Length: 525
View 1 (cartoon, rainbow, N blue to C red):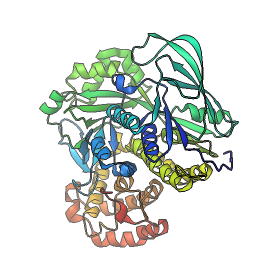
View 2 (spheres, one colour; view 1 turned 90 degrees about the horizontal axis):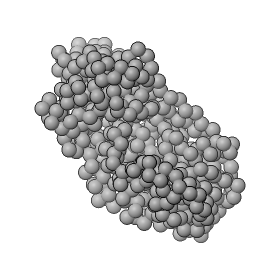
View 3 (spheres, one colour; view 1 turned 60 degrees about the vertical axis):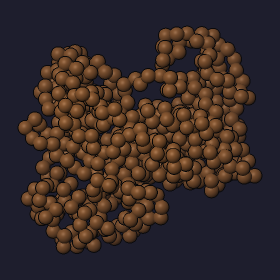
View 4 (cartoon, rainbow, N blue to C red; view 1 turned 120 degrees about the vertical axis):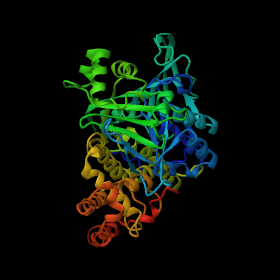
C-alpha cells in the first residue's frame, strides 16, 4: 500500500510528531547529524507538568542503549545517572517462603537499568532543545493531507504554544487546555504547516498519524487489547527500607491470574505496578466498585507479604481503589513507510505490552536503524537524498523484529504472573544459568540475554533470531532439568556432556543458519 514518490530530494528539513522518548531521541540525534528538525507535541511541556502517577518504570537494556553510541559520552552517562541497576528477578511466593532470585545474565556484570519514564522524558526533551530542535508543544494534529510531495499538517494549537515559522495560522477562540492547569481557557488557533521534508511519526500507541494514513488507504493496522489493565502502586522509601527490599531486583509477586511488581527509584522508594483482569468477580471494575474495604480484603488475601512494603494495608488499598487504571495492548501496522513522505517509528508502528521491558529499547533500536539508513541514503547536506530507499530499508529491517518482541512480551505476561512461581520453571531457569556459566557458555546464551544484550554488529542477535533460538534452547533446558534435583543443585548436577550433544544437534545448526555470533551478546557495547 505504500506510495512510492521516487523522491530524490535535497531537503534537510525533517518533522517529528510526538515528543515522547523515541520522538525526542530521534529528533536530537538527527539535529546533531545536520538535519533541521521540528518537533510537534500535542500536550504541554512535560517539564512543567507534575508526574501523573500513571507511568510504569522503564527498563533500559544494552540493546536500546546502543542507540546512544552516536551521541557524546556524557549524554549516556547523564541518562544512566537517572536509574538504578537491576540484576534479576526476586520472586515472592508467600509469607512463609524466602524470595527466589532469578538472575538476568551470567553474573552481576550483566544488568539492566530501572528508570522513571517521567524523568527520562524530561531529560530527552531538554537534550533535544539543547541540540537546537525547534519544539512546539500544545500542537494537536487534527488533519493531514498526503497529496503533495510532502505532507501538510493541520494542528489545533493553544495560545501559549510557540508560533511555527512559515505556517499559516488562524485564531479560533477560547478552549479548555488539558494537562497542567486543566480547566483554564486559553486561546486556540489553527496552524497549517506545509512540510518541506519527510515526517517521522513518533506519537505513540494511539498514533494520530498512523490512523490518518490508514484513513487515506496508505496503511492498515490492528490493535489487540489485553483483558487486563494496570495501576501504579508506590512502595514508600521508609517502608521499603524497613522491610529490607533489595534494590538490585525486579520484585514480583506472581499469583496465577494477577501479579504485583516493583522496581527501585533513585530516592530509595520503589515504583510498583499491579496487573489484574479488568472484569470478573475480582477484577479491577469489581474492586473499584467495592472501594477501599474490598481492595483491602483482596490485598490481605493475596499480597500479605507485600503490604508492609507498600506502607500498610490501608495505604495500599487506597491506591488500588483510586489510582488511575491503564490499558495494555499490542499494535501491529502493515505498512510503516509511505514513500519518502512519512515513516512510523516506535509505538506508533508497533506498540507492545510491557512484560519483557523492551518497548523503549525496541523504539531506541528503531532510532539507531533509521539514523544509520538516513546517513546512507539521505545524508544531511547532500545534493540529493533518497528518503524512499531509507524508509523502505528501515521497515524491512525492523518489522520482523518488532513482531517477534511483541509475541515474546505476551508470552512473558504468563511467565511473570504464573509460570515464574512453578518449581519446574525454576529448575529450567537454574539450568539455563548453569549452562551460561559453564564451559559451554560461549555456545549458549539465554533468550533473555539475547533479547536484552543482543543486537548490533555483524552476527548480532535481533529479536526475531532470539525468538527462534529461544524456542530450541528452552527444549534443551527442559530435557536437562529432568535430571536435576532442585534449582539449587543445578550448577553441580547439570549434565554438560548431554548439553553439548543437544547444542550440537539442535542449536548450532540454527545459529549457523541465522548467521548468529553469540559473542555479540554482551552487556558491553
